[in-house]
Length: 65
Image (cartoon, rainbow, N blue to C red; front, side):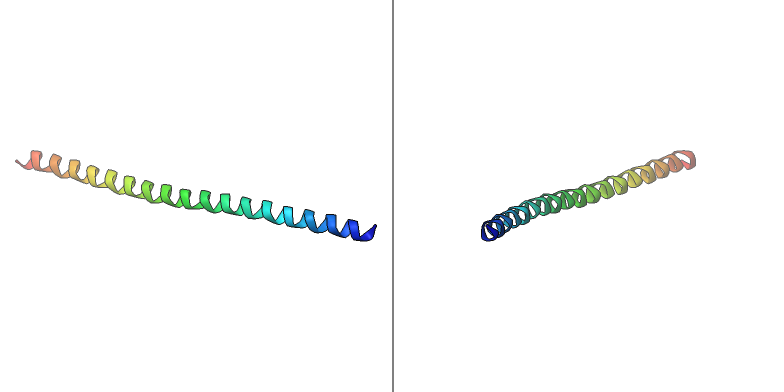
């Protein structure tokens, strides 16, 4: 009977480890996606800053011109 319990325990352990591997894989994928989003947001922020600077410069040129 102890042998059967040991086998069941081993099967459960293997199943649990596989589930944890799947969860880890999903979390890694989510992390990579969030990194890409963070990079895209940084690019958007930089583009907005450039547009704002262009507007400021064009406004100064109109005032001085």
